[in-house]
Length: 498
Image 1 (spheres, rainbow, N blue to C red):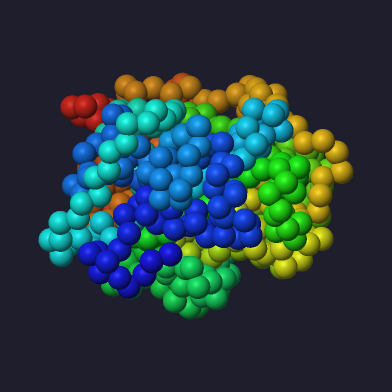
Image 2: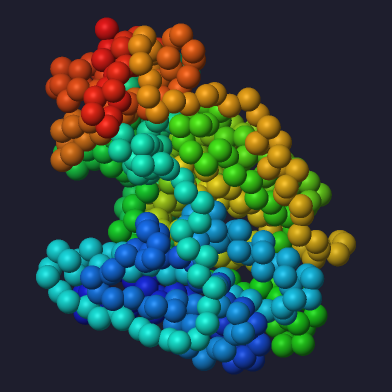
């Protein structure tokens, strides 16, 4: 983690990733031998490359071959270089995949590594500093691209597909279900997230670890201003970070061959993956995440463990709704004394793009090494509670041969649920299913509505008129269940409450 450096002194994203990779190599006790033995290097996709394909121009240039830009800095020459696709689930996803390849004998050793220099880029733009991050490398690598589309142009035009505007739709649905006033829900979210802040305040790698009380987190001020209702600033993932993390995977036999000490070894006992319906407009509802629950239970079954057997957790925590829904899916109390994070979470530890969960895994490894009999559970989330991957870890050796699970049955179960119909061209009487109000510099500017047509129960997405009195009403009162009319207004749908 870099903090407090001038952009001119800071490393580029691949440099931060390689610094983490170098520490991972050193941690093995045989860095040169391990670097030489790497068969595969998976580079987690950086945020600047996460929006379009081909990759958008970067004002400072880029490493055109990310996995080998990292490998070169490490003195490694893996045969396979992979540049991952988009999603906070991908660190766990690629650990699962590399473990499967190792178990099948396809490869013997792999590194999964990622780094972001988002704070450096922000400061450089703000201060008018020109940086040169351009790197060329002609070696062949596998670019997995953006991955599955997580929003449509129609959704995006109305405001869906941006995390800070999308997760509040889940949060307001939870607020309505729990019959909370705005102030009561602010207090509930702060009570949930303050223990994350407490962990971050003790974590030297946290980027936003200043201690904050629950009262401070809940109080809306000029500093802790609303971003999108009901989230003030400190309830949002904070991506202005320079952070990197790396893990090395291998078989027990290869670790012994290279002389890696047994007390360094942490085992992946269980893992799984599953996706929700990819589009937010097509979800079952906005208070649950079936794929999260189902895939995590499969990972626990694979490990032969239950939730009660876990000593520590890192629940993906980009926004409070992600934590709350995960707890409900898992049957985990929000105030479980074991704690819900080993890093401090994305609002306080920091949100290094797609790579956060790799930091969670590294922190989990360090924690488990201090208590070798313990087990820990990681949940990783990509998109908007969209793509999920889970891992169960322990220093305890596996009792049987490891085999990558078949998650297709879990995915079929998720896909087989009874989802509502959706229309891009709604017309007529309707009601609000969930909503948010988006702010700019503390002032409300836009309302995003997900609603249902009364006649057909079809779901739709819409905006409202930009009327201050309407915004004020939606902020002060729970708008879910409110009736109105929806119609097309140019390329957008317009919802008018009655």
